[in-house]
Length: 233
Image 1: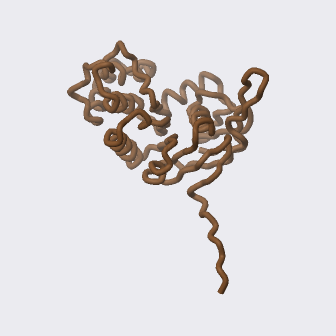
Image 2: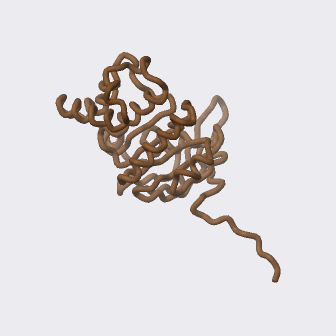
Image 3: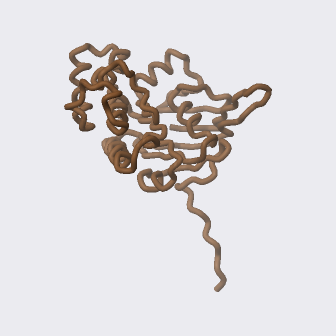
């Protein structure tokens, strides 16, 4: 994943707001990459651009040879369907559907046959520890259980990239730890995980590399050593 001069400017009334300002980054395949920063630093914009949910104002994004910034809407839809899994802070589950039906939903859009959809969704719910609760609707599940359903759903199409936007933001510390462990497990199995969080200690603990954004620019990069002051002899 290669970003060159990535810029996103929004118009708010008569003002222009720069959410991302000329980012240059390379994220290796199989990385557990973190993005930290305060609200308004550009974290979610960064994730939306990588997921093909938003359009850059300038610059380029290349993923496995595909130029996202030059792709058609049909190509971006195919990219999201086949290559990317999304995990959101608010879970974004369909309240009228069971856990099983929520996990099946991406497979419906991918035209996977019903029997295969059900089998794959059941296996994923078993994997996240929710097999016995597959018939429960979101309102009958705890926050941690809903997030695990959301993770199972994000894995339905076997994506190469997982984009997680504050996935533990609404969870207690114990449940957050279990969700984080699931993400680490996905990464160990070869998936690229890009985690957006305001929690710097969490990023330090789980990410192989992380950046800190401020006003749409990279303030720090854990891959770049902090210069140490020299001392006299």
